[in-house]
Amino acid sequence: MSAPLPAQTPDPCAAAPNDCIILTHERIPPDILVAARVPRYADEIGQAVTTYDRDEIERRQTVSLADLLATTPGVNVSRNGSVGGFTGVRLRGAEAEQTLVVIDGVRVNDPSSPSGGFDFANLLAASVERIEVLRGPNSVPWGSQAIGGLVHIRTADPAGGADGDVSARAQAEYGYADQLYATAGVQGRSGGLSGSLNAGFLRTDGISSAAAGTERDGYRQIGGTARLGLAITDNVGVDLRGYYADSHLRFDGFSNAPPFGPADGPQSGETQELYGYAGAYADLAGGRIRNRIALTIADINRDTFDPDFPSAARGRSERYEYGVDARLSDRLRLAGGAERENSRFTDGFTVAETGITSVYAQAIVRPFTRLTLTGGVRYDDHDAFGDAVTAGADAALALGGTTLRGSYGEGFKAPTLFQLFSFFGNERLAPERARSFDLGVQQRLLGGSATFGATYFNRRTRNQIGFRSCTAAEQGTAGSICVDRPFGVYDNTARTRAEGVEVELALRPNDALSLSASLTLLEATDRTNGLDLARRPGETASVSADYRFPFGLSVGGTVLIVGDSFDDPGNFARLDGYALASLRAALPVGERLELYGRVENIANARYQTVAGYGTYGRAAYGGVRVRFD
Image 1 (spheres, rainbow, N blue to C red):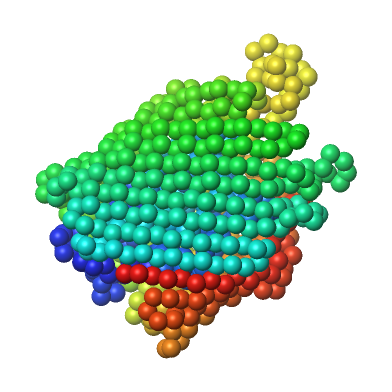
Image 2: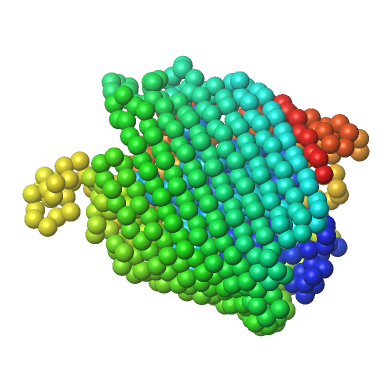
């Protein structure tokens, strides 16, 4: 549920008052990019989107963004043991690898991983300014991998500040398992030039990744982001963005003797992530038509140091993009573009590359003031599997304090290079496809101080790619995909279904108190056998509340409740439900300094999100923040 952005200085609506709206007595510009890749208002989007801004990130004292996402409606998070262990985020019952992640305009899913997923373990909050979570397929503007939904992340952008402004912030905290987390950032603007630089560091001894282990598995990351913008004229400018993270993790392997499963060992891994964006824009027709060209690069190196299974994976994707946003009138807006993506990977045994060429177009129509209709289509031509066409449409009807929403979305996910060309690969794979619709209502209550929302969703996938074994007969049959595949092969093996209800509540009766709550009821099954999909709890709920006293002290807490699920596709290994509660407090000292602290899992609950992997018990952390404006 989106909260209004605070007013900025100078007024971002002053130059284009017709492009801004009045909301809770503040003029705000359109701010949601995730739905159509162009800035839009929450009230005109028919899809389900939840946003978090920097204030909420700091209020929750977030270190790993996955912990914040776990309290989002329709979202489930699992982690393999200690901090830094593989962390998957599932949206509305989709696979974790079906979540597309975009950071500052760069698609960052790993082209070298077997299923093309993004590991949220290495995504920290140091430089993140805003998060947008769209639930449901949205391949028209975003293409392959947006089959389950999209997490769109923006780092600090100084372009909206006042000329001559320079600001800086820093924080440091220490706590359980010798964990040290520190961040610092500076941003400013002078004339047409704006820039920001942020850095972060995390070190922890961690816990044993194996639930039965005793050896701690530590984690360390150092990283940073940078942005540079230059407005050459009022209508032409360039934008450069960069992201770098270097992460090192100790983790546990698997026992070769009963009981089989995760066990203490000497394994470790290193990951280097480098993402870059270089773009330019040109506004025409008095700013009503914006043209954009960009080159984006995602480069990921992963090394695993394992006595039994050492590996080195290298993945890289390069995208060439052109986009246009044409506001032809107050009633009609067209957005679209053309893209070319080249990707390649190597795992030390296989070297492979492929590409995809795409065009898409969307129309945003307002037949009358309170109704917004959006529809679009996309065509993709993949070098390996051929072409794919996807479509999507949504509607939003704002009736005073009530907004009715509905959407239909299609998504596809191209087979990964590993699935196509590795030792287990299958060049006959078809792309995974999904169709989804949802219907929702949002109601403002108590003079706008409370918002209630409910959404029903239904999603079906086909051609889902999985790994399967090969029978002796298949291995001996000429033309079979199992020839020379004694250990198995990737194939289009599954059809799935997910449906459920998401309920949200936000309450802010005054400046001192804020409360948010959500409930998700989910039924996610494999349509081929009727079994539950692994690690999809049927019920998830969260409540978060904060209160600020007149003398400045703020206190708050979050409760996350997760229902039972299964850890395996065969539904043999059960994961019991659990409840986690945390408390936090923050106290300003003067105008620039703030002391804060939190206690996580205060009841010391014992639970698992992945069978055989450990989780944190009660843990406390304390820190300090400082700002210079």
